[in-house]
Amino acid sequence: MEINGIRGNKGLGGLGGLGGFRGRLITAGDPGYDTARAVWNGAVDRRPRLIARCAGTADVAAAVRYARDRGLEISVRGGGHNVGGTAVCDGGVVVDLSDMRAVSVDPAGRTASVRGGALWGDVDRATGAHGLATTGGIVSHTGVGGLTLGGGIGFLMRRYGMAVDNLLAAEVVTAEGDTVRASAEENPDLFWALRGGGGNFGAVTGFRFALHPLGPAVMAGAVFWAADDTAEVLRFYRDFAAAAPDELGTVVRLGTVPPLPAVPAHLHGRPAVAVACCHAGTVEEGERAVRELRCFGRPLADLLAPVPYADFQAGFDDTVPHGWHYHWKSTHLTGLSDDVVAALAGHAYRAGSPRSYAALFHLGGAVARVPADATAYAARDVTHTIVIDGAWLPGEAAAHAAAETAWVRSFLHALAPHRAGGVYVNFLDADDDAPRVREAYGEPAYRRLAQVKAKYDPDNAFHHNKNIRPE
Image (cartoon, rainbow, N blue to C red; front, top):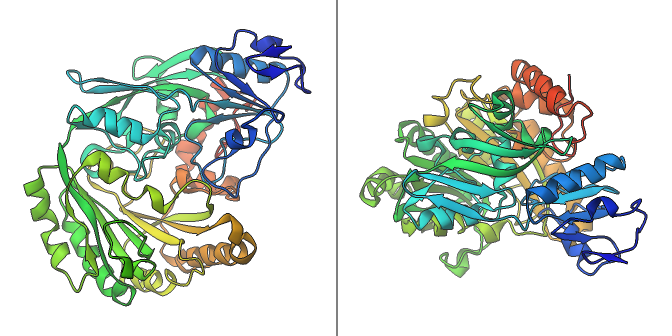
């Protein structure tokens, strides 16, 4: 017997509970199982019993109830982009939202309704067609759900706030398989928790975001300098960023020059520091905002130019593709003192893999103007956060895995004297334990999250995440 392409029971205790399932059900005996269980981080290799690729919210609720009734593990997959591979579990049910990618834009109301499996590229293209945008990630194949639920860092955050600051409402399937709505008016405790608390409270099947005018073109791109100039560039950048208008979002990348089409081939793979920029204003305003940066020192390459926002957002996708092996560590920084600059310049280029890098994010602006207790994301006073990304090819695992992991950890250790309290939860790797999850929120927010968790998921059914245990 087949049910939506699945034959027999296959050790699942029967599939009768999913008889009305409209999507696709995939198990180990089916073609495409290995593709369906793969996530962005190729180092993650887990084998779920069932992948329930949902066609809509009713399918999500049915899959959750099915797993709960049979005592099976549950993971929720949106974009599958979390470095820890939390989207897929061993021996359980993956509630897979990746076919739920619809984006609907209300240009008059300046809102977007986004299904739970959408990627940021889907949102950027749909909203950009109307000259609108909202804060998303810095890679367009990142999932909307995971990035938003953890806070949502992106180039527009200094002007328009983080993704959670633009979230107006969410549709959630709870651990009981019920569908509820969360907003400032409905289930406000859940709405607060969703804005930074991750996937702890249910499977989020829909989001509604506020949109803002942007484009059609923005001044965006990156400027590269030789690695030998890193300390000088960072000292300049420290003052440049501090004086930057809220419209200017910047990210510093320390690694090698990626093989981007716009970069001369002879520079590919050369150690370099880059400052990537996106200005959320007119092109003319953007040109003025980045003029001093472009004139500093002796740039190897200047890629700053007017470009459609969606194109810019996708411009670095190929530098972090699906299937590479990744290991991350992260921390908030107290600032960019000379000692921090020395630590960054001294450790950034010690990686063995040319694919490894560190990324330094400048926050502040609109992010800092939100009260710390308004959302579960509470690190509103942080100005800089860093993620150190070890990356290597699957075939290089034996040669690079231990070395890159050691480089990541030694780099974080070198920054220990300069770490501010907290860490961005979306940057935590699989081996970051419970104390680091608590660190991401601070004790007051964590205790409040644990209380909300106890209300909506008292059995901790949703624990394949950066887990907050119910109080």
